Image (cartoon, rainbow, N blue to C red):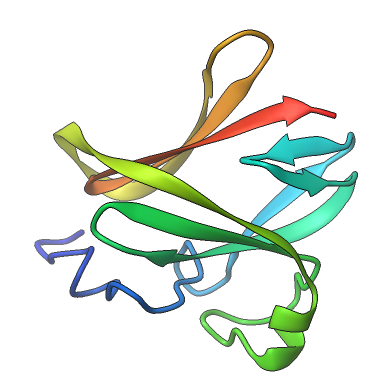
Length: 127
């Protein structure tokens, strides 16, 4: 954060965000998974989001070599799905964007994205 307001300023609401700094966040899976309702076959993907104050729209794309926020029509054409996840307020401020797995209900986990005082949990299950 380095003293900056992240969501709503550094990362504007309603605009595409690469979900990271410089390069987009990449997801590698050796098995088919369900990511927040999106069927994701085994393979390599990039994630990006459109953040809002109360939710994130999370996109999964097969495009893994684009740079930063260059979410061009070619990148969008390679999307395999989008899911919407609610955000919640963290108890404590998180200085650096952090993505961690967290046990969830049943045989699932959640990918937890945390930065500033914002937390988004994306359920993940094997398909």
